[in-house]
Length: 170
Length: 84
Image (cartoon, rainbow over all chains, first blue to last red; front, side, top):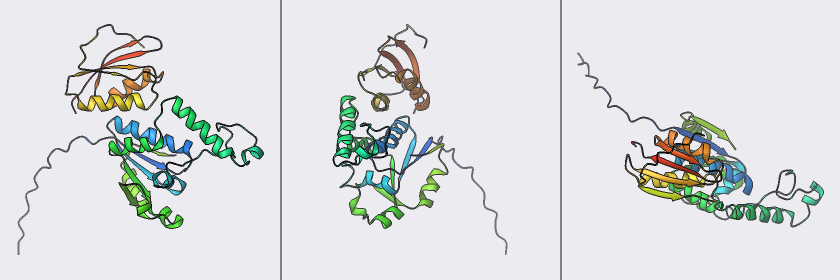
């Protein structure tokens, strides 16, 4: 039996690939939540394709009940808004005070609050990968997360990151 | 930064005075996204980072920085929308 060789048609010319940014957001404090969202909204504004992998404490940024309540650590944070010795940083109310100071700075500088940054990123089609292992370890359900997250393991994120031009761990 | 004195006719104008990164770039990109190829955005910034950020934005987006003026506290840019 003979098999006719198939004619191989030339592939239609693919449009130029967009640049891609892959970020890991691993921290769940207010001050550490801003940098990945600033980078993501900027890159998406430049026309890049952007994905953020929210893992471990970073997953709180996507947690419906927590993302509006992220705090700035007053303890073991020598660059924090309230520069006090660790002993005083442990005093009740110190974390709330540090958080209040940073929120005041942000408001004075007319920087959007975190929920607004999340809306901006989603409006620019930034992909939010929610780390599946973190969800399992920390008991987070899909219904606990904000709308529009992709639940993904490390392999799925690395598959995205492997084609990225810039990869950063925050 | 060199100052070019030719002032192209602007299709749209955006003032981001008082806003810091990433807002000037974000807001400019939003407006540029609605313009047609060849149309011009007149952009005013006071963020000191804009001197570097706006030319970088134009380069990355495939738009064209037609002219700019550094007025000290304020920077003004004319950005031509590229093919997208």
